[in-house]
Image (cartoon, rainbow, N blue to C red; front, side):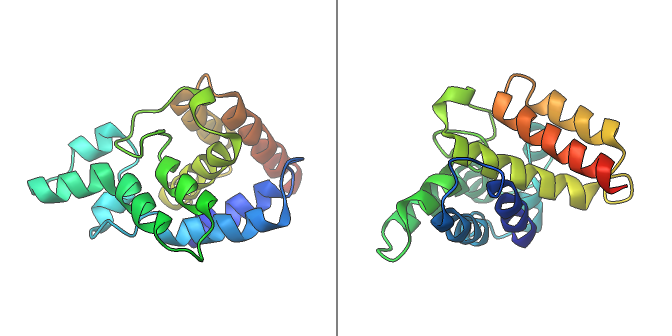
Length: 168
């Protein structure tokens, strides 16, 4: 969660539409996005394929599939938390409904949410592939396979690859 907030914060610095309150929003969303998941396996599930491979009880499966929607609904009831936090939490797996892992068309989720989706995916990719992370083809292949048509994700990926190539 901390890494997701950090990556989202870095990407916000390059967005022309970014405003100072977006920094607070991404960090709050990162801390609350998985509050409804009780197992590490559930937090690490990044796709329907990952989810299908988990050995879980029926109630655990329901909680994981619906965790973004349920968390967003709970967050909406807290007056001191900005509404955008709930919107990011609901969309953090790339679904407009907050249910499951199937990606919504790019235009069904706003740009701020796609930035957050990318930050979370990059944080999971980083943790899973830390030894080969800066092999650009590995990173590029992952995101191009998972989000081939998403212009926002591909633009963010291009920025990450450019930064990585100049840093090495």
